[in-house]
Each structure stands twice: as structure tokens, then as C-alpha cells.
Length: 467
Length: 149
Image (cartoon, rainbow over all chains, first blue to last red; front, side, top):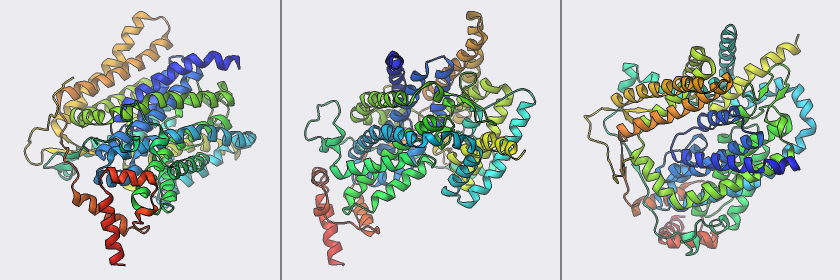
């Protein structure tokens, strides 16, 4: 208890920093979670920030990003990040109805309600699963294999996704053997390669003359920026307030839909956040009779699910197993499990010294709720007050060339930093292959993150088991 | 940072734009942006490494700080590219037309769940529709749906 109290100042400070940074990053469309959250969390860990601060930086950052990612999605019709893609259909229809700002406020209110529910729900599910932790650790190699195959089959690629895992895993194993020959061990380079794969693939594709012809456009892309709505219809005339309560923006049925989908999606922690977001939307869709209310409720529940899946998929593997047994734990939260020399998870034995070794269950709950509270004080009012200004700034002043430049530089920095020229070669190789698989086979990055873990956890574990 | 309210993309010859990673870019600008990215990354990573090697004795700390300076170099590359090139996109802020609203309501009516009735909506949803001026659009669609079965 004394240690928990002593860690509160650093936890608050890092939550504020994480929330501020990712509130701003979230506004920029296309900023993938893994490509942004993982490297910055890694830097925070390696700087020696105490575990409580690392956790609140990560969680407040993820929660804040999933609030502000709604800004480009609702106002511009461009997904803010990967999990925002399933929101586009409802966002487009509500934009067409002329109420995008109302949609935005409802989506963000749903995110806040969902985050408040998901933290205790995830801790509860982790507590239920904890007694099976040792058993699960023993069987982890097989569980990873089954989870990877299940996640691949649940993607749009279906059975082709499961088959594609075989060459992808073989590629990772081959690259690992190649770098190990020179004493180089890589982790973040793989995550970044997978996350930024589609961009790397497109940059390569544009160099091919025949492709370039197909990629040419006579006109620049046209973006419709929804005009600001004069009346804040759901705020009951209290427009001068800093930010409305989520309960003023959502009716009882909408709060119920968000609460229900948050709990369900917190329990299903091994599935991809994008798949769960789609699934929860469909679950709600069939239950609302009136068209407009159905649209706003589905949107609210979907954005809530982007929060709950991220929170649960990070918390449950940390608390119950100490192993990255979910797409989020294997992707954006990967540095919480593997950030040598601070955190490590042994591939062959399942032994680990990672964030789970330093924080207790009550600490995860308290610091988790603290992260939600800080995001509610920073990202939530930011969306309510400055969403239109922020969206207008991004669409008018931030060129796509600038976004590509920043991510290209990030790929170079992280891979060179981790493994020198070998790191760069690995990131480019994984990036090109991942981009091709994502584009051609409609796989999502979560499948490939699991493929990476099959290579580093399942294969050595199974080989050892089989003698 | 520029503060002009609505910089629009300059007209380019036909086919000058390329659709890359979800948005349009100008090929030459993309090439320069990638060049700036390489410079920013290397300057941030190895420049930071050189500076902190001179300042700190601990090699591990130098390694960590070089990652931080590298990330800052990446952000700087993005900012410099952003300052050099305006977005290759056009922005419109036209108010939504009534025809577009009606089309969306028709899409809802044609969906498997149907349009439903305004009476089935919560008081909050009905207030939102009223204040957005959409109630007549839904009433009209409901009427049409009733008349055509």
C-alpha cells in the first residue's frame, strides 16, 4: 500500500505526458497505434521511468489516442488509426446527415464510459484467469499457435490467413537465425515492420513504372470537412461548459449498449480489436429499431469497443499470465513485455521479468483508473472543445508527404538503433512482406504480430517439448 | 508555422498526383520528403549519439538518449517536410445538401433492420433530430415506407 501511494506522483506525471502526446498524435489521420505507442513506450522504459509511470504513460496514451482518433474519422471521413476503420460507415452516414459533431461527441462519450468500465472488468477477468496462469504458461507455445490460427481465420483472409502464417513465421525464424549469427537480437524492428508494412510496400510499389501509372491521379484527393455545428444539441443549452458529461450526450439505451459491449469485449481478449469492434457493432445494430438512433448507438458502442479491447488486451495478459497473449500485448504493448535490458520474456521457457513482475493486481487497477481519469481530464475536453479547429489544421496544413517522412524517419531510427544495418534490413524485409500480405490477402496486422510470437515463443517451446 | 486560413493545393498538370498509402502526394515532393526523413533520422540518431557520448560516461544511457534524439529527428523531418510542401488535397466545407440526407435515410430504410419510426426513438434522439432539422426528412421517409408497404 505504501509503495502504491509513493508511486502516485510519477504515475500521474507520466499519465499526463502520455495523454498530452497521444491526444495530439490521435488527431493526425493514419497514425497506427503500434507505430506510435510502441516506440515511445520503449523510450520511456529505457529512460528508467518506474514501472507505475511506464504503465500509466502507455494506458493514458492509448485511451487518449482512441478518443482523438475520432476527430479525423468523424469530421474528415479518414480513419484516425487502425481501430478507427470500422467506424467509417456510420461516420460517413452521420456526416451525410449533417451531424458529424454530434456523432463525434457521442463516440468520445462512449469511449470514456467504456474505459471506466473496461479497467475493473479486465482486472476481474484477469483475477478469474490468474489461477490458471502456471498452466497457461506451460501450454503457452500451443496456446499462441492456436490463438494465432484462430485470429488469422477470424480475419477477412479466413483459411488463406492461417496458411500465410506458415511462410511468415518461417521468414521471422530465418531472419532471427541470420541476426543471431552476428549476436544481434531484435524485437521492436519486427513490430515496426509489421505496423508500417503497408506504407513501406506502397513506397516500393510506386517505384515500379507500371504501378506508378495505376497510382496516378489527375486531381488531388478531395476532403469534405464538415462545417462546425452551431448548436450543441445534446448539451441542453449549456454550451459554455468546458465539456459535457457523457450522460448528457448518451441516453440510457446507449449507455447500456456501451456498458454491455465493453464487458463482452473485455473478456474476449485474444481477438483482434478491429474484429471485436465490427462484431460489437453488429451485436448492437440488431437491437435498435429507429434508424437514426441505431446509427448513433452503433457508432458509440464501436468507439467504446476500441477502448475496452485495448485496455483488456493489455491488462489481462499482464496481470494473469505475464505473457503477451493477445494482439495488443503482442503489438503496441509489446515493450511492456520485451524491452531489453529492462524487461524480458524468455522465448523457450516462458520465464519473464516484465511489467507484470513489478506491479500487483491492486496497482494495475488503481493506476489503470488513474490513466482513465487523466485522459478524461485532457483528451475528452480537447475533443469536445477543439475538435473542429484541430481537424481543420491537420487537413489544411499537414501534408501526406510530411506524415510519410516522419514515419520513414521513425522506421530508420528505431531499426538502426536496435540492430544497426541488420535491424534496417529486417524491418524493410518484414515491412515489404507484411504490406504485401495485408494488401493482397486482407490480413490485419494483429495476425502478423501473432505470427511473430509463434516464431519466437511457440516454435522454440514446441521443439523443446518434443525433445 | 503558417497561419493562413485555407491554403489549397496548387493546380498541377493532369496525372501529377500519386495515390500512396491512402492519400494523394506529388511524386517529386514525396522523394524530397523521404530524403529529408533519411537526413533527419541519421542526424537525430548519430548526432545525438555523438553529443551524449561527449556528455555522459555511461554507454547504456548514451544508447537510450540516442533513441530519444532519433525520435526527435523523425518529428523534425515531418515538420520540415510539412513546412516545405502544402497538402496535395482540396478541402471543401459545403453544408450537407438535403438530397444527401434523404439518400442516407433511404439507405437506412432499405437495410435489413429498416427505418423504424420516430416513436421508437428515445427522447434524446428525437431532440437531436429536431434541433438538426432532420425530423421532417425522417417523417417523409416513414410516410413513403408506409405507402409503399
